[in-house]
Length: 137
Image 1: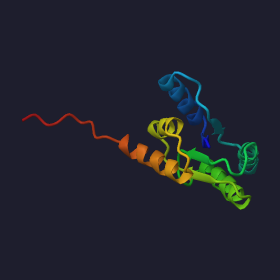
Image 2 (image 1 turned 120 degrees about the vertical axis):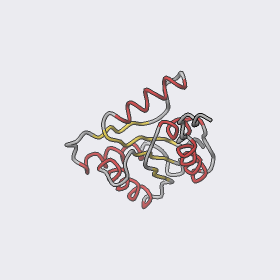
Image 3 (image 1 turned 60 degrees about the horizontal axis):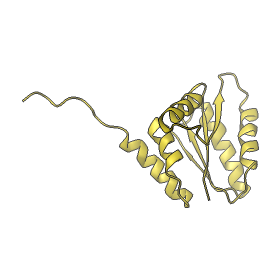
């Protein structure tokens, strides 16, 4: 079963990651974007995320990617996650999202949502490379 993917981020980051993924993959990515504006009421945004969650079946795994741990988009996603878990949904939340994570989530679908979550997290780490030129000998 394919994992449903959502980006819950400060506006316009989610849309920018989507445009980047479309450019790299050459197709419109299958993900939901919640770009959170600065003055957005958090409960309304949590309800929007939950409405999207409820569009799927509880046995359909979900992975939500956020930009900054502890920031408003994260808090919105975390509240939606808590409620969805109480309702029996299979849902995971990762923060610190970078382009590698988005691409990994879109291209490396796993049957096991825990495995996908970990592979996406590892994709972020592998994308961080010290690319300084070596010192001259």
